[in-house]
Amino acid sequence: MNARAAQDAVAKGAIALRTQSLSKSFGSLPVSRDITLDVPVGARYALIGPNGAGKTTLINLVTGMLAPDSGQIFLGADDVTALEPQARVRRGLARTFQINTLFAGLTPLEAVTLAVAERDGIARRFWQPLAANGATIDEAYDILRKLKLADVCYQVTRELPYGRQRLLEIALALATTPRVLLLDEPAAGVPPEESGDIFEVVAGLSDDLTVLFIEHDMHIVFRFATHIIVLVAGAVFTQGSPAEIAADPAVREVYLGTREHG
Amino acid sequence: MTTATATLTPQQYLARQGRWHPLEIAFWLATLLPYFLFPDYLSLASQIAAAALFALSLDLILGYAGVVSLGHAAFFGIGAYTAGIFSKYVWGDVFTGLVVAAALSALVGWASSFIIARFRHLTLIMITLGLGLLLAEAANRAHWLTGGSDGLQGMDIWPIFGVFHFDLYGKTAYLYSLAVLFVMFLGARRLVHSPFGLALRGIRENFVRMPAIGAESRAHIRTVYTIAAGIAGIAGALIAQTTQTVALESIGFQRSADVLVMLVLGGTGRLYGGLIGSIIFMVARDQLSGMAPQYWYFWIGVLLIAVVLIMPNGILGGLSRLAERWRKR
Image (cartoon, rainbow over all chains, first blue to last red; front, side, top):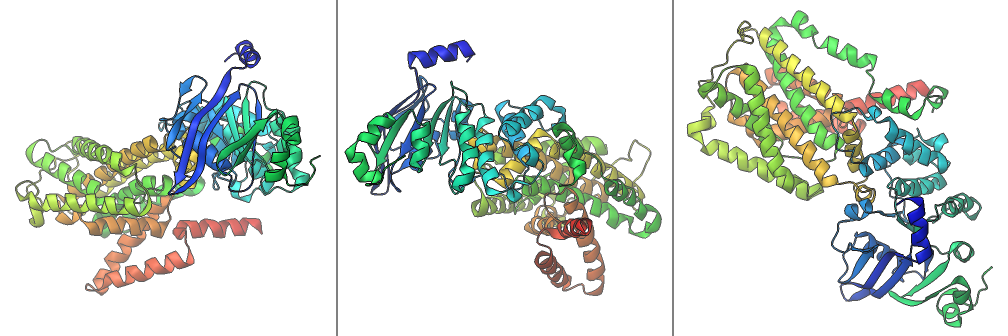
């Protein structure tokens, strides 16, 4: 998509990601009930809800790591419900993980180079030295530099500080050049004074990239989200603009409690 | 990280990983030593070279892609029988024999890779074990073709280039096996340092993340399994050509287990692990079976347990950790 077309899509309110009546049960326990969502191109949607509300399950359904019992998932106009996770990624749907799911023994440079190489179909070349793909390596380094990981890009991932590993989660997702990015608690486990780095990255993402993120910190949710979806017991409890959600007494009751947000 | 690497560009850094280390060059020069120092042991040395090639092929799937196999001898055996039968009925040229053996074992590897790529861990071990037993039994039954438990007789191997006969001392056999091992090693080394090699390491490091970066892990596994089967077939063909017979053990479970032991002894995921492991295993077997023909496996067991307990990443893994500690001082 070129910049002009992307802007048009944003202006028209085209839908980047849609779920239609998604349902999923683990045995007799329903974890997702009839979830219908429309996420417009370029939006910043927050997915909130108490623990066990099914937020991560929804992301697993959307990305194909779980198969829904019923319902459909659309990426743009295409029904991707039957596609495997990797096929969805190649169509522009990327995610990060709440619990670090990184290549522990690779360096960030290797890991992101791998992601770029997979995207471009270079990763099946067994006859060619990796170093012969200069453009791939440079692009990977560029992503790492933008995420302020350049200084550690030659260190083995398992030895990186935790906060840097959280950034690498995002770098790996961005290396697939997504149109829709799902962030599962990007700052999970990072002390508040360090989470700023991560949300600076989120704030700096391109306007035509559609973002759906799970986050518990309400300050961050209200600062970054253009729209909030409240999930309770596997179903959409309510959704609306941050102002509407903040003013909704029912949301306060089930989720926010009586605590004031900032 | 040292300051030296900090000044490298990303391209230089990744290019450096594929560069030859002086120790590697020393290793390959040392492989010529048996020719001069142990002329009485060249037959053994050529069998070591074939075993090393077999272990190298297992390292590609186990050490790089994390695919555990207990039936890898299936491909070794297919290669050995193919080379043997080909020389008996068709053509005695060694190089054609290698190509035909590699092609057939790679073909069987490719066909079975569709099952292999779908599973991991214990299921995979059982499936590879089952496939191995199946082929071993088939080879036993096809007595008319393979000679069954009597071994394949009547091979006719021509001199290499029509000049170099396979002599009694194993001079030709050793140099030939070594040359084939070296050429295949160069190929494996290139693969490991390719984008595909990086993808294999990705599969080993985190199988769950691979689909999330859009990778077709199963296609990668099919490719490497096919390649490894082809290389294992060449290793089997080398044994067949240099010993001029094929024993039923070539395709048996014992050989699958032995190659796994060699690789784990030396260290997985380093290319050289299988080479070092096969040297230690084969020399130990030769020496121990001379001393105690009945129970030399006892000592192999002791060696294996000792190495795995002291150096979980094999001998090379242990050595590289020592070297690292030395450097940090």
